[in-house]
Amino acid sequence: MQSLTWDEAETRFLKYLKGERNVSKETLRAYAGDLRQFGQFLAEREGNSGTGLDSISPDIIRSFLASVHQKLEKNSRARKLSTLRSLFRYLNSNGAFDDNPAELVAHPKVKQKMPHFLLVDAIFHFLDSLSNSATRAGISWRKARNWAIFESLYSTGIRVSELVGLDQPDISYSEETVRVFGKGSRERIVPIGRKAIDALKCYLSAIESQFPGALASSPALFRNARGGRLTARSIDRILKAEMIACGLWQHLSPHGLRHSFATHLLNAGADLRAIQEMLGHRNLSTTQRYTHVNMDQLMKVYDASHPRSRKK
Image 1 (cartoon, one colour):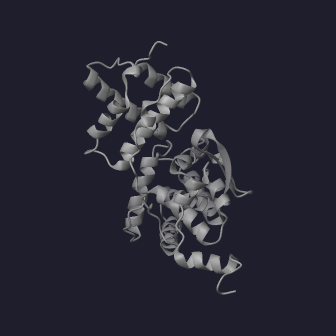
Image 2: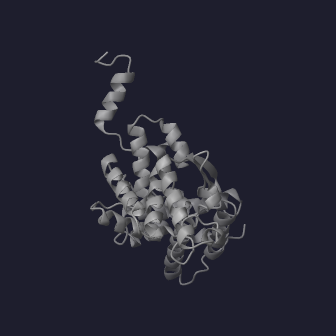
Image 3: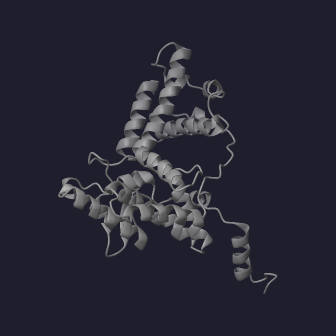
């Protein structure tokens, strides 16, 4: 079998991820960055970027990980190894290569980070502050938009990348649901609460009032000042500014609202499988990492459910 060069293998794999796996832009960018960095390492080591795959050994991959050891945390090194494993698995499954040297490299032990989230009282304070600003006389459409953004994120638990991709017809006000296109363009329907619906109506009404006809110019739901679709990075900046404005100084990303959504539902007794469905996770283990159950809640569930509980 004629060996592919690294460049050829990288190109095939990225085309596969984009065309067949239909991964998100963020995921594709991460894969491409990891592969490009490994390709640069090979070029410096071998003297050119046309290195054949059959010359890539587990030792070479270990040397690559060692070269980034001082620059990157374990999580990032582990992701780079996972990227290489995925590339070789893809080549194996397509008969383009017969080996997977990355499988013989030990995976760095990664300590699970507890993601940031807000307690219920802090969430209420934050969203109520946004609501008061948005509904006060004379406040611009931006305040109404910001309220709608964060009410929607907390109400649905969707990813910020999914939120910025929403179009106006994706919201069903009568059914109180949102149609979401998640990773791999998998479609799911999630419920949305009355508070979020009120915020969305306030936001869209403010746009139509201040810019008549603007809503018909684009299907995008959440927009910037130029009428274009908001980006995830913009929402991150808006969240930081709005949290400071209402007196909350915790470090929180938009993804933290997703963690808060899952944690608060579970603490209130929601079924983990139902939360998994709403979050759009394929594996239940992923959902479990998004939830934080305090010991008091665990003891309540135990005492209410276990047939040999000491309180029965």
